[in-house]
Image 1 (cartoon, rainbow, N blue to C red):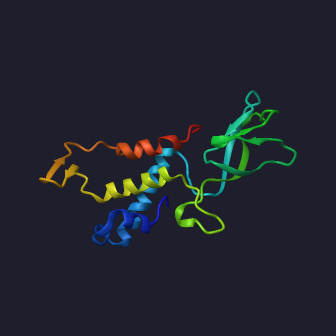
Image 2: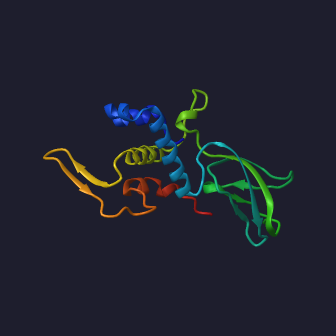
Image 3: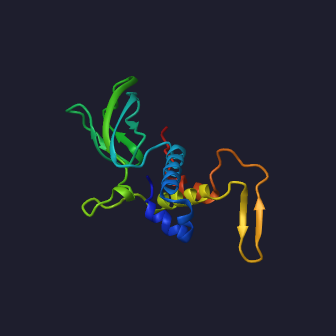
Length: 180
């Protein structure tokens, strides 16, 4: 998950007690999943396997998840790992449809997985986006805006399906997978 229960509780303050840990954890999991789906990639540092198509006219293949930490190819293949999940091979790639199996370690150390030896590496904007989206999910979906001074509430006429809150969308946009 892209944030922790403690971080969400800190954001919500006293309101956290109203929902309970189970509901808050579900909101974090849901928000994390929505963000990963929108970004077309996963963020957890782990081993991934993909089957990609080779093209001898291109010296690049693109992997879904990044940053890439290590890659396994057949021995003797010389390659270079570039940013954003791109792998460069000066000799080009063998031609074929889904003909290259790639196993690789990629992603970020998530806040809940961080240790002293392996500290978190997830960019702060992604965690903030998850916190904001989880918080948004806990509010009444029919309420578009609120104000405390002189109490003002605006209700949404019709919910926009599939739309993320503007702040969340802006925070995650630099992390959307470009290759898939």
